[in-house]
Length: 166
Image 1 (cartoon, helix red, strand yellow):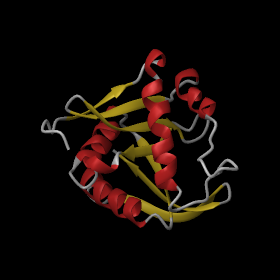
Image 2 (cartoon, rainbow, N blue to C red):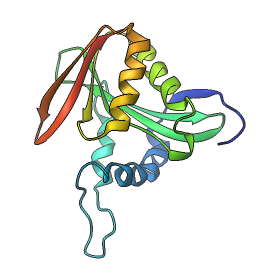
Image 3 (cartoon, helix red, strand yellow):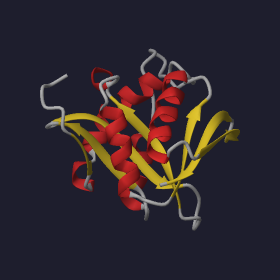
Image 4 (cartoon, one colour):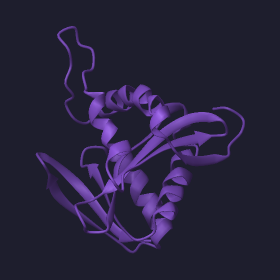
């Protein structure tokens, strides 16, 4: 990990969306350990990056780059949980492996929560134990332990839903 440990989040303008588009396959590859992901006939990961464009087109969607110093460490994609509920949803949150377990993700998550005060939900795949542990740790600190955790289906995936206010 580079020497400068300053963690920041910056909103990614549409003109620079390639930052997230280029990093997204790494996120999909990491997620393939927990959920099947589509592949091409030759085994390469397949996804349609066009669906990411909604983060620059739809209201109340917020694409953030996570930086450690000047280096791109990951991304956070925030969106409304559902139309007109006022609840924020962490659509995707990814920290590159070389920045994991160094406090970068926790600092970035807390910055995202602080940037959007109010009611939240975060969904985590039940078999993604590293993410479950991460969010339990972050939310215990960020909310003083005042969050709820329930298991629910999100489309066809069984998820842990964390709900809280901050």
